Image 1 (cartoon, rainbow, N blue to C red):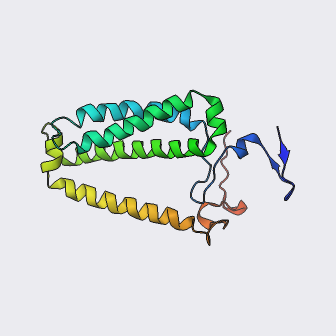
Image 2: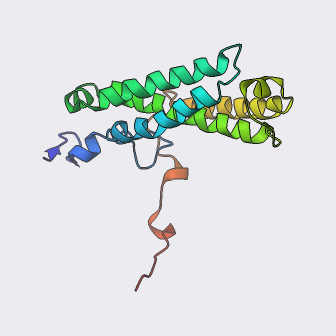
Image 3: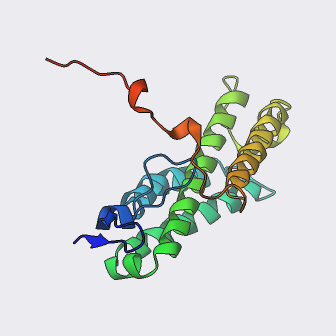
Length: 180
């Protein structure tokens, strides 16, 4: 089904209507990600909840991964109903963002475990007691804050609607691939 936008007389298809395009996203985020993405993240979160939370007396690691598990399970149940996905598109995008956050947390924790391990067994006590944890966590935290600030800056009201040069392809810049 193709509808015409009365303002610009531009055809808008269903695929274009269901995609979200931000200034830093070049190809868009499809609503279909909610059907697959939580299934990928859920086993990793479960493994890190039980494996990474071993000897976790403080409970920080288990709490973080329990939140990740809850977000993934809620997204899996939400994805089972197509009518909910289409009716609550903004909630679907929020769930996709939260599931992306859980993947980011899991990969960062795996990176932390790889950084601080020196052949010993890995447990929560190893993470808490290691001095190398600070050398990994502080740069990752600063990088995360910088990325969030940069992304938020592009969404300031004065910057919305601009065409940014870094994600635009000009006609003369394309390289032609000759496949024969």
